[in-house]
Length: 143
Image (tube, rainbow, N blue to C red; front, side, top):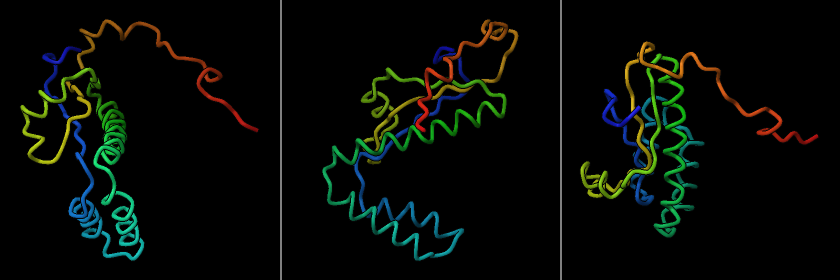
């Protein structure tokens, strides 16, 4: 699937740095449906202690990994809905950020995901056998 073949293009972005305000906003999203749980506030405080005084470059190294976790869930969700999806790296993040005004929002693009309606008639890979590494190749069992 090429970038101009999709019906939708998702841009996964990450904060350029962690701030107390950003952490509070995320925790606030959790408090609204769940109530102000002491454990949630303790977690919030821990995040602030660990990230807010930290180096912005180190904090940014953490943020894209969070975007990739979300990407994984969205890929699985698309498959469940029978929507074709393709994650895309190799992008020019500065250009994507400029087009979407991400820098002004304190964000940086990480990875793209192209979505399109499933078209089995045009899927030349559909009839081919799936190629997977063996379990022994990818799993190390420790007894």
